[in-house]
Image (tube, rainbow, N blue to C red):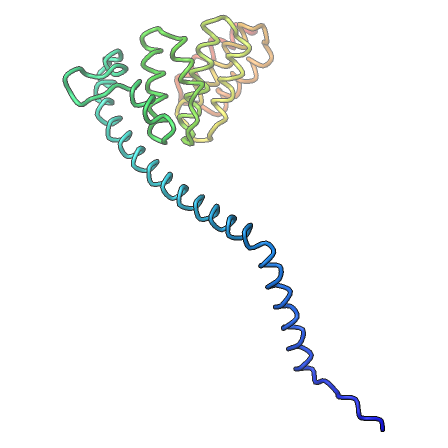
Length: 228
């Protein structure tokens, strides 16, 4: 005698599929359990190390900021060698040490620019260039200073084209920089020295048009006369 075939309801079919899926998932987990646990441990370790590193960087940056604030008083007074080396017998460390210990922090990067400036004012252009070039911070004004500092170094070596290109880059870092007119003027002067008169003329005219109240504007007139 034939018996009626059992009809499965949709709910039962879904439940059956779910059981099958869970069973397969369990088998997969059992097979790769060791790898899964190892991956979880690695992820957790990376997260912990990352959290610790961020905390340490924050502390280091804060310490660099405190030390930088102290030495800047010496820098601003024009005692550049003392600003580089620090003041003996006090807790004021020099810019060089700040860079050595905290160079990877934001305030350490800022210290690089002031250290480079100090060397430049003392006529030690090779050391200045090293720290200008090493700047890797995120502050646009210091990025421009870094490029301009490198440009000044190349100009002192009579590598005028390279100097002009870097001054031009410095002027284009940000739209709001009080030094932009001077950077453009220096770029134009170096292009002139490199024999690239058209590039120089274009920049001098740009200064006349866009920086009418600047000292660079008055200087630009003198160089434009030479080009006539």
